[in-house]
Image (cartoon, rainbow, N blue to C red; front, side):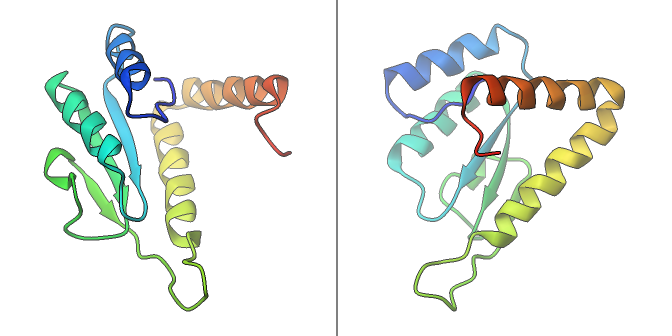
Amino acid sequence: MPLIDGGDSIGANRLASAVHASPFALLSVNLPRPAKETLTMLELASDLDLRIGMITDLSPAPGDSRADPAFATLLGSGLVFDSHAAPTVFASILVDAISDVKGPAGQGQLEVLEELAGRRGTSVY
């Protein structure tokens, strides 16, 4: 599934095209105060019969009625800016668990993504 980072017609086209590539789920990260476009993409994903997982900072959260499961991970608010440490760690654990379930194939997919990120310069490492 490609990264869908916009709620415009390009994002909608990416989502619709991804469905034809046999994805089984969409992971939505709604932190904090999701944009209207995010909710539009969740509606489209639901209409396309994708299973939706959500990481959010609220429970209940906007759009979580379309998600199964929805994981609420609290933001740290003790600083001037909210800390996204807990949701970031949770997302890492979730990806690791999915990789474990998929076995060597899952690890191979993650390695391919790492290699692509390095080639494209999208990683800071």
